[in-house]
Amino acid sequence: MDGLPTPQRRWAMTAVTIAIVMAVLDGALINLALPLMAQDLGASPSLVVWVVSSYQLVITVSLFPFSALGDRIGYSRVFIGGMLLFTAASLACALASSVYSLIGARVLQGLGASALMSVNIALIRYIYPKHALGRGIGYNTLIVALSATAGPSIAAAILAVAPWPWLFGINVPLGLAASAIGILALPKSPLRKQSFDMSGSILSAITIGILVIAADGMGYDGKSSLWISMQAFVIVALLVWLYFDQRRKTNPAIPLDILRIPSVGLSSLTAILSYVVQSLSYVGLPFLFHSIIGFSVLETGLLMSAWPLALALVSPVAGRLSDRFSAGRLGTLGLALLCLGLTMLLLMPDQPSVADVFWRMGLCGLGFGLFQAPNSKAIIVGSPLHRTGAASALQSAARLFGQTLGAALVANMLKQPLEAAATEILFMALAFSIAGCMASSLRIVVKDKPA
Image 1 (cartoon, rainbow, N blue to C red):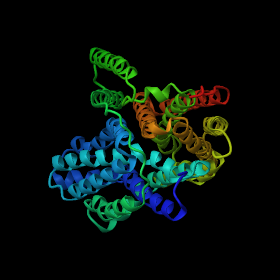
Image 2 (cartoon, rainbow, N blue to C red):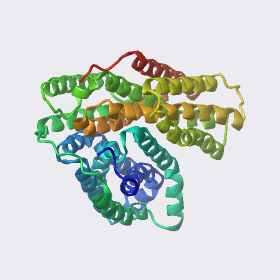
Image 3 (cartoon, one colour):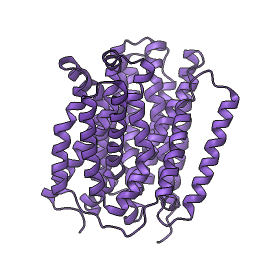
Image 4 (tube, rainbow, N blue to C red):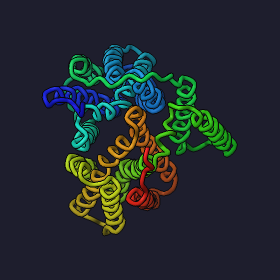
């Protein structure tokens, strides 16, 4: 069957939407409440930061194992199991009486969120008919963008009327509703008689975890060159070990098999490079707007919202266009517009108005939105049907790794004087966007070999 019938499709997408909104919001809601958590739980700021870091780290290291499990036992089972775990962990977070129990509950919540994120696009491949798949992925991109954009505002609204545990408590009724709808409406993907790559899953989790922690700590001072060299040696050794372990397996946890497909490999590279640009811009530009140019906090918030708002507006359109035009052409056009927007930011006058900056940020968001949905579709459609879960996790992993690397680069550049750092961040973002545009353009001429 090519997709679900319309009534069931709507219910299935309702379950997916609720789950993704919850998972994305919980990565964006909590930052605002960290000082309150530290005060109420008697924890130091450095310790309470792990309420956020543990959640993000667990998601990153467990995406591929969950996707491999989804390929084997079915995506809806992994999704519903993840939803139930996320809901139970949210209740545990709301009831936590110490920072350690809160962090432990966040680890479980991260596992639930990872299960959801690892298979959500894989499910969309079964929910929508082939001719409308781009529309479904564009809708998914829109939901992620709106959730990330609205996170701080929703957190502020909740904290204005309720204590911080309610940031987690609201997930409980939503999670139960999404689980019930999912059980009734989600499509049943074919079960695969294949072994689960347990050793590869453990090795990949360790390798990716160490890599993310090392990248996240790049910006901290006080590390000796010997310590940095030891970290680099361990990471390279683990990557080599992981590569040779995975290349000999038929259904590896790390999807090297589908990365060898030109369209998938190039689309994944394009995604990593582009998400580095997004992270560089999201983390670094507030310093330029507020500390260098002198915009107020309110004006800076308005300017930073132009990118995700433009992204949200164009994502459904880009999804529909991806059902008619290739990801290579749409992605290259989008990233060319992103390059143009970043160039215009570099060429701004010394004292720009809010309008001068807003349209430039909007142009960046327009270009990024035009790239995002078609690129995600290219990774999914370019992969064999029985490896859809791995492709879904690959798309999420590319986003998380690119964002982590971008944030680490910003942290390193902020070691120098702020004015020089702000300009360097923009040049770095432009360089990565040009590289992403070049990687995307290769998809126009490089064709996949027939299966």
